[in-house]
Length: 318
Picture (cartoon, rainbow, N blue to C red):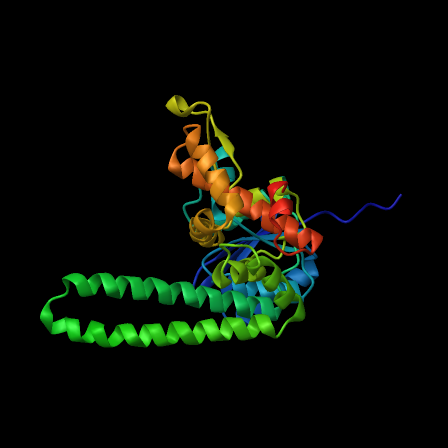
């Protein structure tokens, strides 16, 4: 009987200048420059290895070029939440102190946990996601400048006053670019129209979900809540025993969902009644709002699953 090929698991630690690579179970390792030439060489070497799984951590975008190159080469690659990798390292007593050890830890994570590879977003989706990221950056800068203006000494106040209109202009241009990208795709446009038919859901929340949560409408309510990080999880530790909280997931999407929910509990009759009912039975405002985030996400998920626009009676049973 022929023996099957041995499985090989790869961990890649990504830094600005370098990619550290580790293999399991062989414990082989090497590093390459994090540039076009280094990435091309890495892809060719891994093609010869034929890995079972390649795991990298999300590192604020530094991982995007190498991840895209690996995916284009049809190599099974997964980008994992750094928290999950750190928790695994702590549990196995392998706290990394160097990039090489970090890569080995990721290879061990790949071998033991075996996260499922998912198709990476197409180029258009990555471009839309980049526009939304840029929008968040502009909003943060605009907010910061407005705060500075309140306490700024006279010599720099004029500079800040000149900068604020420029930021507002760039923000408007970015919003136009996002709208154009959505309009160019019939699928995105249909999703956007369905989502925005919901009272309280505006273009920013809708387009963030379209671009950065392609799973919306494909998962059940528990899965989509866990993906975004609004699923209630038990916290049985010390004095927190019996308390429940949501964490993890896609933090930037959750932040946009939070702001959308603040609007929805004022303008959406279903969410407003749900929020008031929770407050009436003694739920804290934050707890009630988190439950509304979860309910709103569940409604939007069901709408896309069934390809329907907002309907109050339908939403009441979602």
